[in-house]
Length: 518
Image (tube, rainbow, N blue to C red; front, side, top):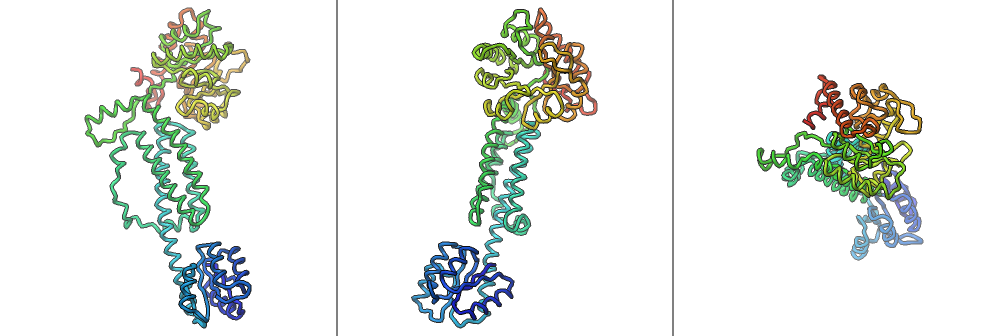
């Protein structure tokens, strides 16, 4: 402890200094009330021994000032002339104890020891409370992190949740006493709240309710930590974490709502509930309906005079799973007019509709998402425009770009151009199948191969690790777009069948597609 001794008699200061130092504490001395206030302000002592009668400023006045500086400082008032009125006055002003002179040094030791035990008890309770709430927050974060990782397969959200959990652990270690002091204070077996029934146990009926319940757990625990840390110092870091948890909850819930709608999980769980009883929590794996297998890109220049809507309708009839609007020469107004028509068509057909480059247009027409090039909007900016529920794809031409897109939160990537490609005028050099294989080994989000792909390429493209293909001319440059798209679909299905892996069949994209579509 830091102990401040204040007395105008040098011999008393010296004597107390010897005794207190022998007990292992730090001693600061002052010789009048003004000096006492200055040193109390500088050192914030846990304990003060202060004489009542002193020059410049008396002890009672100094006591008031010290208590204004720090309410936590315990002040023992010393005097040879204590009356009941004086004792009553100094007690009212916050004195911890009144010590009559001359005093026995054993009394000094007893006061210090008692105060130490008292503070130790406070620390113990403080550490125990922090331990319980750090555990609650960290456990809740782990639950939602694993949901983002394994259920949503969302790299960016998983990474942010993991970083928040690690930041929480670092803060726990930075607090006085660190994790070790909190661990020693733990009393799991004697905790009076350990056996309280939890209402949440009966309400967590699906992923969404599970995640919401755990975010509430995180936020409540962080609030408790924040409030109690305020008693001993600034709590800005924990407050920042709490507000980060609010934002992450909103994103996670939006992702999950889309996930549940796409998979019809509520209908499946309702059916299982009728069989398993009202208290069953059913979270069996279900099939995703988002299908990346065949993306037909609309650019009317290559469609022999057909309009974008005609192209979209024909491609959907032929089996396209994604329609991407890529009309570089259209004005914004034209893009919105055409985009709204295609969006309605896509909803009716149950296919995914993506707008190329323009996040603002995608939002305006109600598209499912946007596809970005390397020179277009950054993913985080597009996400701010579209919100967390929309799909964002990114064109990539090397492994570094693919990994960066995954890290930044892309939902899928385009990889290419794989082969000679005359649909673009930028003279891009084909990246080849070896790069696709390399990316497939390193990147977990869906990978759509693009660039000069024709029907005879499909098997080798799927074998190289693509989850789907994107085409322009191979589909829309033909006289019959429905027939050309259907031919691509047939070859894709053959390729998926041929590429089934006997070693890891359930994780094979071909297996997943075939199960979803048959």
